[in-house]
Amino acid sequence: MTEEQRAAGAAIVDQVLRDRGWSLVEDPAEFAREVCLEAEAQAAATGQDLPFVIERRTVNRYCRLLYAACGERDSQRQRTAFLEIWNYLYPIALYRLHGTNGAQDCTQQALVKIWRKRDQCRDPGAFLRWCDQVLLNECRDYLNKRYIRIETDEGVKFVPQKVNLEDAPMSQEKANAEESSPAPGSESPLLENSIQEERLRALVVALRVCLQNEKHVTVLVELFIHEKGFKQVAELLETTPLNVQVMKSRALKKLRECESFLQMYEEWFQ
Amino acid sequence: MTPSLRVRHALRQAQPTLPIAAISLGHAVWHVRPPAYTHAVVLDQLPTFIEAELERRATAVEFRELKHHLLVCASCVKIYLDLLHIAELEAHHSLPRPSTRPNPDLTFLESDHE
Image 1: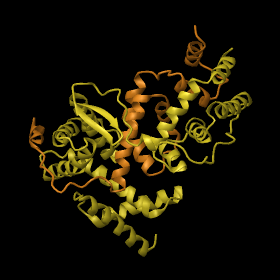
Image 2: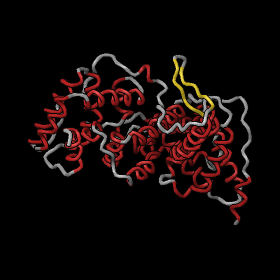
Image 3: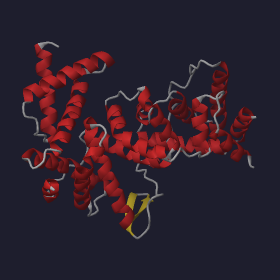
Image 4: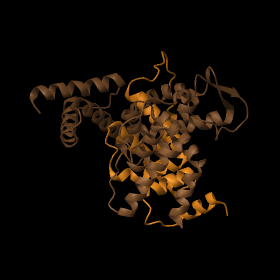
């Protein structure tokens, strides 16, 4: 990394910290240097865009700092850490609860749980994702106890009622889920075993016959055969992970109703 | 036994001549539930997996089982998509910014002494 690149990297680090209001870094120059070193190695290994890697590495490294500060008993750093987590989580609670009144309560409950269960976070570098998980559990419990979710033409509404929401659909963008032109990438999976290879080919043919929808075929091929994640498939199809899940569910339903698909499995198991 | 029940039953047995993809797809189509213990394992790994996805490095073999679980488990995929959605909003600075924030009650930190 040249001096110029190092300075540009340090500026990205500084920007990430300032944008998020993060203040636990004691030696910003050293912090930026370590982030840039880590990012440089990762970018070299993966071919990813260096500024992007610097941004993500800054978040990752700061998460580790935040996680450690949460455990520094009776210190100002510990209070600062929990204040920063509060500032991070509260807008998420507001967003998730759709303007209902419980954002403050849920965030407070989540904060106490984060403090109590901090040791259960397996990956300090993903500490904020773990905090998200704790908060979203609180929000779910809150909504389940107080509201029923109804999807209307104007969007999702929450009606106060004592009904369990466990089975309610979560989709906000369901209506947008479908369909445009077919996407590339649903061809020729490589498998060593010839029987398996043959069956995999038969599987793809059966998907085309039963689904009659190249986009649904692509979703299933990418998820199940190419083992891509929802986010990767969403990027490939230029849609959201939630829409990928909706398309997947619709495709699975069609397969369930397709006689020839069932027959193919029956033959395999004879 | 109906044909779909026969297939479900067979999918639960080891099937060395079937590709993993066909087994997973069969599980997803006919609702063959993953073993109960795997839910907790998956939920534990979700933060790391989502962080890896945000960093576009989630192709590693270590996440293979988690991905398969998400393909067949309706409850875990719901939680995953919810988390991923929030993480993406945060990464793109798209979360709403409230003009005022209430203050947290941090008195729980005092019981740290005990």
